[in-house]
Image: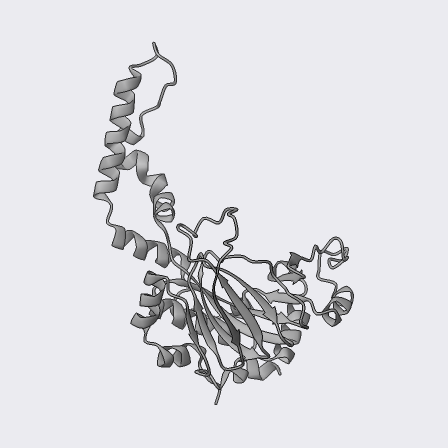
Length: 302
């Protein structure tokens, strides 16, 4: 019987425990808790994913020696705008790291698992895989703007954690990489890991390595403001008043005060919980949605 990814991770930690780690932004390494990880996905399934989705090159990213592999430099995109699998194969033998994005867009199994995770966690979830085909460092030190729930499926990978989670990681921008190593460990098949958004890390495979990751997105205040922005002019006339830049056109001090008062009214009237639920309703998959035109679970494609 095919294992349910979502049911398994909620048997390891409850929904409230996962959300607590997210709110407290706590790194959590859980060795050996997912011995069935090899049943989730395989190298063969990823090869099938590649052969099925090569017409959508945006689903793939490649790294080697801490730098992105530019598709143009290595002729990875053909004249039709598709991923050239023949050009890719020599890089695989050199130990390239490949990110397979949005598995849930191509597999009904992963689509349904993403729905279950979204509804339980109250978030938006996508499922990715990272395969390292050798022992060459893949990505440079970096942080993610989403929480990560990772299952090591095959091989071993050394993780180095740098510093502590940065503030406001939801809007990614260039920051200096922390100098201090705050944790270091090896992920092996069957291990799980929770990495909070904003925590710098770097990974080096010790052998060919494969992991599956759930990327968990929650809205920030800027997302809510952006969502309700089209309603501002009709919600409060003070927000629909046109503004002037020079003295003589209007009383700039009064203009400044009136606009700030309107913004304060807007914030005071906001129901943050209701807006967060509305944002999720816009972004999450419908409860009964299915992914048409894809096969079944990963095992069906091996």
